Length: 55
Image (cartoon, rainbow, N blue to C red):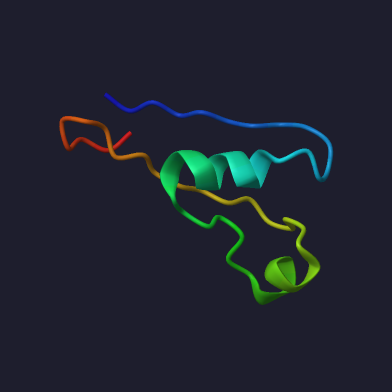
């Protein structure tokens, strides 16, 4: 089973930080995103489930 979660909201409300806290993955991958501290392009991350599946 695949589960997809999406976040939406205004800039600087912590969506990328939430994704990082839940998955440990930095979704801001572009150098400009990191320099500005602001997401420009869509980022994706996966979550390892307790039974070793990925969601």
